[in-house]
Length: 272
Image (cartoon, rainbow, N blue to C red; front, side):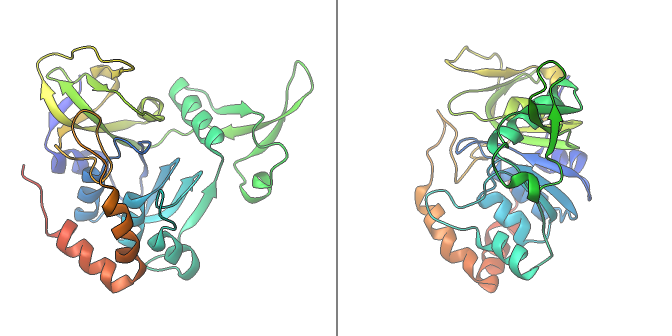
């Protein structure tokens, strides 16, 4: 059964220096509060994995938490580049950042393979692209039945996956709905997990398009109201579109970025 803990205790329990860390969410339910706690706890040498790294990974990279990124697209949605990500790649500031790039389909299939306990996934999606020449975890494989040459990618089985959801019950069952990505697969693929939620309830009322992660499939639950901000949690909060625009200016300059992080993350400790 999943254990209900504070956010700080949950991060301390599941995220260790040197871990491979997944933080998923697609436009919606992005676990910003958890990412900020990782920064406050000064985790380092992390391999960050995410299909669409955006502002929270820009912050983790800029604060020196990461040495590698496995991804399929990176940017500030609707605005432009991730400046801290670019600075790490182009100038090794604050640390050099190793990159492993895949397609969206490749990443989704890697999570699915990990969740299924398989060593790799097979797909057609890379044929005709130049990604295999850039990424050594993309390999050709011949179908034993038809002889067709396909592409194999290794399963993703991270040390820890962190996601945000709308709610959990007191037994540790987690419920989410709305725009979803690969959160379920990412949790099931991980060795351990932390799910931050808007609230704990006595029972989970059914919702359209819901996904429920059963208590036995998760490790820790932490209550973090507003924990997806500046992204949103359907039924609880709206997307802070203005902040995504503001982040472009904040993150362009190293000193401005560090000052903002100190004032708004490092010294802003959430209530227990």
